[in-house]
Image 1 (tube, rainbow, N blue to C red):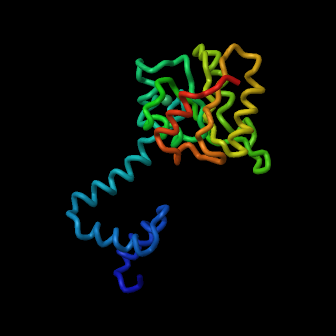
Image 2: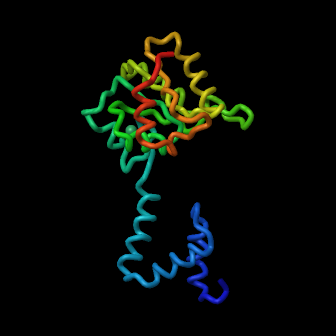
Image 3: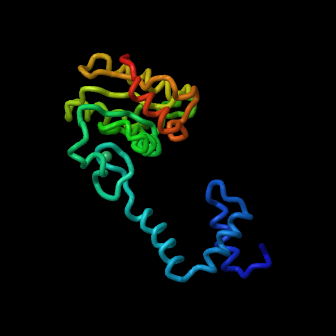
Length: 199
Ligand SMILES: [Zn+2]
């Protein structure tokens, strides 16, 4: 590292902070960036700056969005009576990639984890309840992960929502126990959604 000029060392250090990028890969990427035209390097820098400036959470589903509402919520072709409840934006992306779902989403922003001090008020549960009332949601698909936290979050929602006139379903098995939706392949996700069962 110390053989490089300071500015390159700095770039390598910053690239190496990315997940899955060790120092060797960071060095290779830095050298690649150096070799490419100025324009290309600027585009990379600009797009990094852009996502930090532009990306916000959708006001309705809390998914990733370039504006107040995401493209899924704004799409009038989606079935707004079915809402799929997931932990994180990455889970929504994974389900979208599977192409198996045509409803809307609600991103909780995590799972209940009492041991770590994460309670219902730390997730977007109140917003979910408000949405059910306001938007006349008829079915909630609980698609939190199959980890202990994911299961207990789903169980909590079932308890809290049992008195409301909304059909509750849980994604079917196929998602491995402890599974994180974003690592599940498209076909498995499609089967899990299609085979969801009533709670
Ligand atoms: Zn949205």
